[in-house]
Image: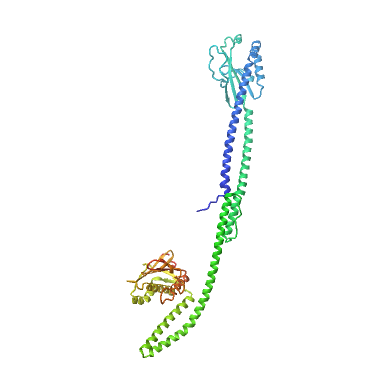
Amino acid sequence: MIPSNRSLHLTVVLPIVIIVLVSMAVVAYVAMYAMREGVRTAAEQRAKYRLAYTRNLIEDIEHLMMVERGVSLQQALIRLSDGPDVDAIRVLSVHGKVLHSSRPGEVGTMLPSHVTALPGLLPGERDPVPVHVRQLGDVLHADGLVLNHPRCLSCHRHGGRVLGVLDVDISLTRQAAGMRTWGRIATAAAILQFVVIALGTILVLGYVVVRPIRLLERSMAEVRLGNYSTTAPPAGTKELDSLVAGFNEMLGRLRHADELEQQVQQSKMARAEQLASVGEFAAGLAHEIRNPLSGIKAAVDVLAGEERAEEPRRILQHVSGELARVDGVVRQLLGFARPKTPVLERVELRSVLEDALLLARPRAQAKRVQLESTCPADPVEVRADQEMVQQMFLNLVLNAMDATEGVPEPRVTVSVEARGGQAWCRVRDNGPGVPLEQVPSLFRPFATTKAKGTGLGLATSRRLAEMQHGQLVLENPGEAGASFAFSLPLYIGSAGR
């Protein structure tokens, strides 16, 4: 699994900040919308109030109009437009022509967009339809009808029931400026809040989560370097303290296992030193025994040849045979205690196997054991010592033939295969196999189940395999028909490499 390179701050803080930012944006949008609607509603109320106030002064204005023919109406409209946020007050015809305005320059111009299409009045209706308010740009327009009351007939006899439209414009510029200012303040506050939340989250996360994790990571680095005496400090939170406690408990077990391993290694080293000392002693003893043993055997052979009586000659020949067997044991002991240094070279296993089988065949014929061999069609070449390989083949084949004693139709099969950069040489018999209780001591020196065995054959073969960078194993412990296999490294360029 590929480890992630994202930091905890980026993984945790960024989503939190994004969530907070989105929440703030939603709240700000709702607040701005509510404020904008509030300002608009207030402006509508102001426009309606101004329109109502203007219409309440109609009687005074009508009196002025009858006396001074409308001259003072212009001035009254100018005076009424002095209120806050009042942009203009106009009297328009039903077609949108400006009749009177607080802006004298507009008189006579057409403003049809300021006139709402109002339905006619019902017979006997005194008041017009309700005031209409709508927004055009940054100006809020409120308009209502000006009716031709009976007192107006002296001047507007032919004017019809509706004389015109009263239009009051309320400017939203000041409110818009206020909204922009409030928006800038809200944006600055949001940014400041965002920074404070981000820094606060980073600091809290760094102190509560990241710092304990880094301390734990530091302790793990010490453990990787082999320092099992370190411990992780408590984190201060329940969840992380549980993690730290588990780590410390695991570390305690590692310390205990390391102490046990060191004790085992020390025991093995002491055992190896003892065995080395015993081996040196045994090798020296075997060397001292071998020289006089050879002389004794030669003398016994001479006496046996000169003896004329049958019984003494037979006894001397038996003694010579036993001395030969003792000499073989001494040679095996010397070979195990002081093996020669292997000469690693290019060795073809087929020819070595044939030589080993050639040496073992007379004994196989005497025991009526059938020898079979299987080798790949292509040569299998290894980097090994040829004499050592032949000795391993011979030791395993002889052991296999001894294991088939008492078995009907005894058979020993030897095979060679190349697999995974190694050559595997396998020797299998059809005997009863190796019992499980004998497996732990199988490759120990002098461990044997044979009546006349020395217990050095398998131990010597395993040591020879290891000296050539291979291994010797029992493939099927507890099963019938023991199968021993040793491996050797393939020579570069050989089949199966």
